Length: 307
Image (cartoon, rainbow, N blue to C red; front, side, top):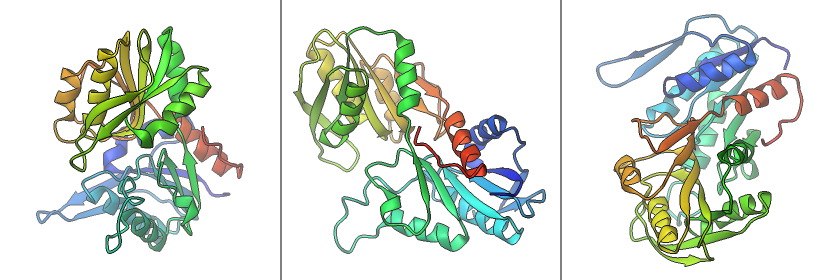
């Protein structure tokens, strides 16, 4: 990529975009977003991006206008003669259930990828989209980053002894196993009965957490039902302490209250989604450096490493 580097921040990722731009040594492009009385929006680029390599930073969690803003700014960048447009999507919404859907149900993630292509996105950078893997079914190149190195560094700094990792269900077991191998320790799995689409009742455990400092692992925390229930189970089974790490903090419904009432010592999340409120138990670590590194690799025409 030979054009000048430009980073465009979107509304729901302003702080993260500024941090990424700082690591890249540039100032974010000025953007004005007009919001009309009927709810429609009109984002406008306030400076030239002519023949520039543009990186638009936006997570696409609800409301759906977050995704709409990304599409509109992509179209604006193309109309302003950007040389290339890369969508940096820290949290890619609508990916969690596409692999579980039945016939006659819309495949939201694949549809969104097609919309990005139509709008003019040349490439996508995203973080921890498992189990959905867009690079297997997309005409747009994807650079799929992961947060393992970020959280591994954090765990080392905690200075805990007798660490073991935990999964909230069988689907998350691979992630817990990955961390267990990384730290040369063991892992446990909490099997859950899931009566509703978001809430969970964790009632069984595979493995022995007794006397260990458990770190529960997952990609997304929504209502926090699974992770809080799993935390209570491992403490009842004799764990010394329980913490959790999660890349994307959706934290919907009464998640904040549930976490505050839980036996979790701490929940570590990233800044892919801005927290709605402050919690003493929830600690945020920044992904800005790993996104900036990916951007600078692309800018130098080098391959992007996952973490």
